[in-house]
Length: 505
Image 1 (tube, rainbow, N blue to C red):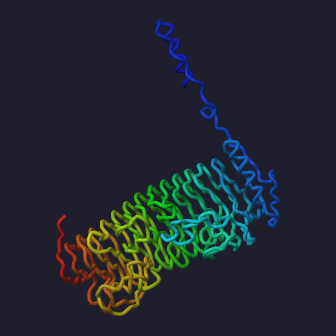
Image 2: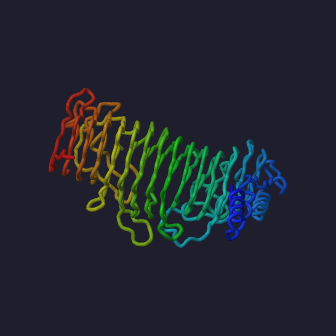
C-alpha cells in the first residue's frame, strides 16, 4: 500500500505539473514477512544432556551467541541438562525447552555467591540478594523461558539463607523490560521458583510451578504491566505474591496487572497475596477466574505493612476451598522501608462472585485498618458467599488483640465474630452476599467496630443458637441493613452501641 500510494502521487505530479513527490522508502523486510528468530541449540555448543555432566558453560556460550547475533532462541532438545553454575542471561534471548528437556540444579555449591546489599535490613535475606540463583540477569530486555520442558532444582536449592555457592532460587531477575514465561514448569525452586524485582512488561501463559516441597512460587516485586493467564502454582509458602521492598534502594511503583484463569494453592501460607513487603504503592490489579485449593494463611490476602497505598484492586469469579482466612485485609505499622515511611492505606477494592470455605474458626474474614486517617476505605462485596468452620461458643465482643507489626492472620486474636470482623473500616458495602458456618457457633455473624458508612443489602447470615446477636455495630457512624435476613428467613438481630443508623443514598 505504501508503494501504491507513492506511485499514485508521482503520477498525479506528472499530470498536473506539481513538484515531485519524494519516493517512499522501501518497506522493511519485517513489514512484508515475519522473519524467524535464529535458533542456537545448546548441543552445538558442547552440552551433553546426560544428567551428570556440567552443561552450564555450553548454555552460556549459546546465550552469548544468540545475543551477539542481535537476538535469538537458545534451544534445549529433549534430555537432562545438569547446570552446576549460575547461568547469566542476556538481552534479546529466549530459552526454549523442548518437550522432555529438563535443566537440573546441582548440589556442588558452585553457584554465584550472594552480592552485598546496603539495604539488607529492609527485607528478608532472600529478597535482598539476586546473584545466587540458577538463572540471573539485571537490566535486560526481551528475555524469555518458553516451550514445554522443565527447570528443576532437584532438591538442591536452599529454602533458608544460603551459604556461598548455594542457590536459593531458579530464576532471579532485576530491572528487566520484557519478560516471557510460557509453557514451562518450574519445580523445587528453594526459597523462590521465580523472583523478579523492578521489572516491567511481563507476560506469562500456561506456566506451571511446583514448589509444594520447599517455599514460594512466584514473587513479583516492584513490577508494572503484568499479564498472567492459565498459571498453575502449587507452593508450600506463598503461591503468587505481589510485593514492593527496598532491595533496589528505592520505593518503586507497582501495578497494571491482570491475572486470569489460574489455579493456586499454598500449604503453609498465602495463595494470592499483597505483601508483606509493601514499600511502594500498588494500583490497578484485576484478578479473575481463579481457583484456590488450600492456604494455611489467607486465600485472598492484602496487607500494607510498610507505608504503601494499595488501591484499585478487583477480584472476580474466584472459588476458594480449605483456606484459613478466606479474605483478609490489614494495615500494619511495621514500617520496614527506607525513607521514613508512614502508615499505609487500603482503598477502592471490589470482590465480585466469590465463594470460599475456611478451615479454622479463629481467623474469620477480616478488614483491619489503623486509627485516624488510616482506616480501610471503599471496599465492596458483591455476591460474596463464605462458609466458615464455626464451632466456637460465645465470647466477649470486645476488640481482639493485635500485633501491629505482624502481617499474619494470627497476629489478630480470635475474632469475636464467626463471620466478618471489621475494625477501623469506612464505606464498606455488602450486596447479595452471605456468611454461614459448618458447625453451630455462639458468636455473632458480623461485628463492626469503629468506622462509618457500613451497608448490608440482601445480606444473609446464619444464626448460632447461643449467639447474642447476628450483627453487632460498635462506634460506627452511619450503618444500614436492608432486605437482609438469617438463613431461615427471619430478620437479623442487630445490637448497637455508640452508633448511628443512616440508610440515605
